[in-house]
Length: 118
Image 1 (cartoon, helix red, strand yellow):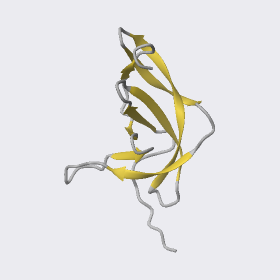
Image 2 (cartoon, rainbow, N blue to C red):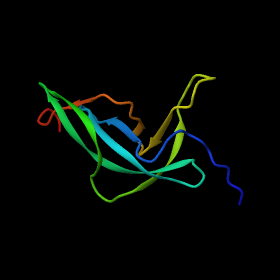
Image 3 (cartoon, rainbow, N blue to C red):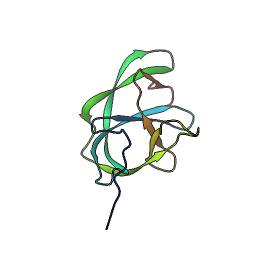
């Protein structure tokens, strides 16, 4: 079988972030722990978050590199979600029917505080 390697720019150690929830906002972070031989999929595992600001109803959270929530590793296909032609690809992964994660670009993310829906 002849498989073409796809260069995505995604590397081991990169972080994906998802924002999901119903009547609340949850933030989950996933770290890339491997890339398939073809380069079309990544192996990710969920990592912990830290709260840096606690407000009335919202928290600002950041990922904690290498702080793995458990040993579960998922192999997920990378999807180019860039909608403009002639621009660099922008990759996402589909975790479930209701959760997609996008490359984390730094800075904090806002989620619903504990007690306000969590």
